[in-house]
Amino acid sequence: MRAFVGVLGLTALLAGCGSSSLPATDSGAAAGAALHREGRWMVDDRGRIVLLHGVNVVWKLAPYAPPDSAAGFTAADADFLANQGFNVVRLGVLFAGVMPQPGQIDAGYLARIDRVVRLLAARHLWVLLDFHQDQLNEKYQGEGFPAWAVDDGGLPNDAHYGFPLDEFLSVALNAAYDNLWANKNQVWAHYAAAWTAVANRWKNQPYLLGYDLFNEPWPGTRWPTCFEIDCTGFDATLQQFFDSALAGVRAADTAHFAFFEPQQLFDFGAPSGFAAESDPLLGLSWHDYCSATLTASSGLPVNLPDCGIIEPRTMNNADAQVEQLGAVSLLTEFGASDDLTDIARVADLADQHRVGWIYWAYKSFGDPTGSGQAESLFADDADFSTLKPGKADILIRPYAQAIAGTPTAMRFDPATKVFALDYTPNGATAPTVIFLPARHYPNGYSTSVAGGQVVSPAGSAQLEIVNDPGASSVQIQVQPL
Image (cartoon, rainbow, N blue to C red; front, side, top):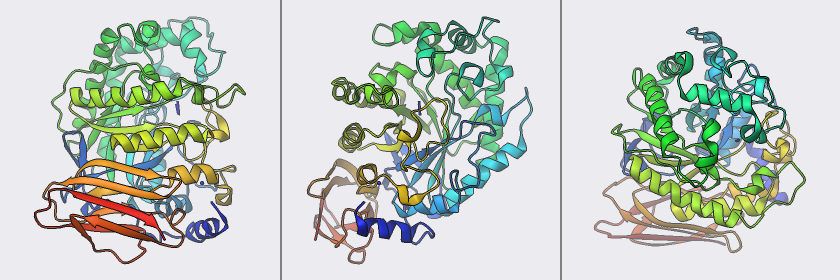
């Protein structure tokens, strides 16, 4: 599935779009050194827990990489993201682009992706490389896999209902997924080899977060049991597939995270049953959607009552699966619409669960399986001045980027603009860093701290707090002037 301002704020935004004036989003790792895992947390080389806020940049159309154009992705886009306090991008890397023919790696495609990787890393944004797919291939009105890697047994192509209905209704598409999970034609080995090539290309890249191994796995014909009945059989098969892809990554890179994703119905409240793994750098990449997403471009009512039930359930399911798997947690998709009530609810839930997130999507990029311009941060992808103010107010929000301890609470009240962070110090001596966007604090802010001291200049967009020696807890509150 995929599958934001008053006059003063807009002026400041436009002034910042052309340069990376905010050294922003440096979560503290020296020169972008790889993060590591401690429990469910991502931790930098200075011992601080890192939280991520960012956007998806996935170009699903051939040639499967964002063009160097105003409606695509340029240095100005990277500057924009850094200046708004985002510190991660989930960047689409499609199997169809990496290996257009069996066993053949397209070096030109990797170079086109590398252009974007370098723009992001130069501005200290973490990069999560995402083998993205929806409905497998263009044949089924989707994207991701090369045609040679898709086998539906020659069935008539009945994928004409659109995304995501084809997943439920198309016999040919479900047969193709069944054959993928059965490893027909040994496609898993090719998929792992593609990951080895990608990991070899970027294993030494500063600000590389890691590898998202497969976007939204659809269970194929087993989907009816995967809502609530019993998906353990498919989950076991899916985990075998992920272990194969993980082996491909680890053949080249043992220093960065690799992320599993639950089967796609997890996004809508179904549980996930991955068993414990021993890899020390494993992550769970998961999504949180509801009817607000499915109806975003249909003209049907949005924000139906299910959203307030499903989205908290998915958060709880993710917490349970992360603990069972032995992984860090990252919400890599939510939103995908202009439903501000829904977007705000998920962002608030993420704060409550102290989990980082990546909004879907930065721009619409002509998404063939999405909800069009409703997904984007902009009314016009080629024009920064069309930033959607309500969406920006929700997503460009205060948050702790690096915490010298274990967070116990993080909350932001959009009405009062009060931000609060509580944590238990963990021995890290580097400062806690909190991003405070000018759009919420146009006249500055005041800070009260128990258990620490402010060490950053007054009014800085990055508030820095040093823990007091011997402090057993730190409580920080920020309010506008």
